[in-house]
Length: 403
Image 1 (cartoon, rainbow, N blue to C red):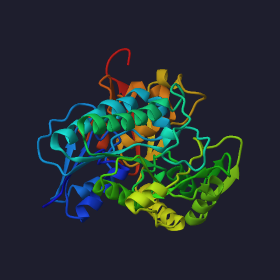
Image 2 (tube, one colour):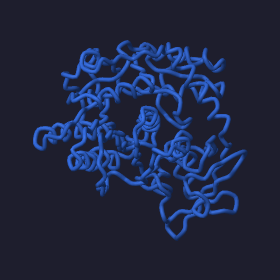
Image 3 (cartoon, rainbow, N blue to C red):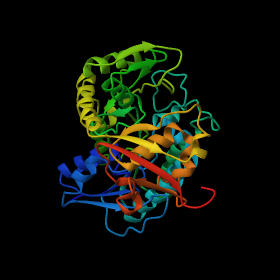
């Protein structure tokens, strides 16, 4: 009998890898995603498969799903420290309303559901490495509280549905998943280092001895599938049992790319707490452990990122002068991006004060601003998915007074 599997957030980085792996094992796969982060090239590849279906839907809104299901994997969530810090409301909504809606689908269909939490539930840990029994050191009103509390709610609600409604739930806590398919605009450490090194830039790091657990995406997906096949409630850590010093990671990326340099400085692009998982439970319960050497994973990621960077356009932004007065100094607004959505996300991530003037909390263009590619309103093209090549200018014009 063919497995019927629904993946929320299935158009994202981990989601596309998971969907591809499920298709490889013969499953019928439905990805539910609002595409607020854009369309990854891997999604187009998936859509050519006759056992794959994409449902464009925001999981914070209940989904009327009646077809039988074998399993649900709940991945849908905003990602990236910069984005979740600046968008705590939509982050909390994905972790609360989105989680409830995913659990309701599993409850109605009597399906196994695996919910993907985060190592952020451990906060700034006082225990190294972190076993699943460690309850964490978090600040409910801190800068990352929107994401941390969203994931803590996810775990609490999954546990509540198991206890009260007997739903077959399983909770996974991932640690720093990386690999091919990450967008160049991704601000997480591996992608950020790769983009800087490919541009021949200096990688500036704080605390070079700080440790990160880096889990290659194929290994992580194998763990997700093992959890889906089990009846374990979790939570279960999935990550590299041995951490990598950030300074060593930066040097490895530079050596792999063949350009760039590394400097330790008082400020840099490193942020977040040092975390490393105890993966004993994953070994004992799921028979899982990561098998991809860091050097191999970084090489595959860099090769893929090199292709993605080469395919990007050089984008210049022309925005109202009233907006530029809100920005520090007189910055030149330009970046490299492959789509309108990626370019606008770069602009609003870099200058959050512009975010409400351009993008809704769901990552779509706000109705009171138009964006033009040459003479064409991007709404009349493919919207945020409009592809960019060569050298282009994106012009932002308020659609009405006060914009």
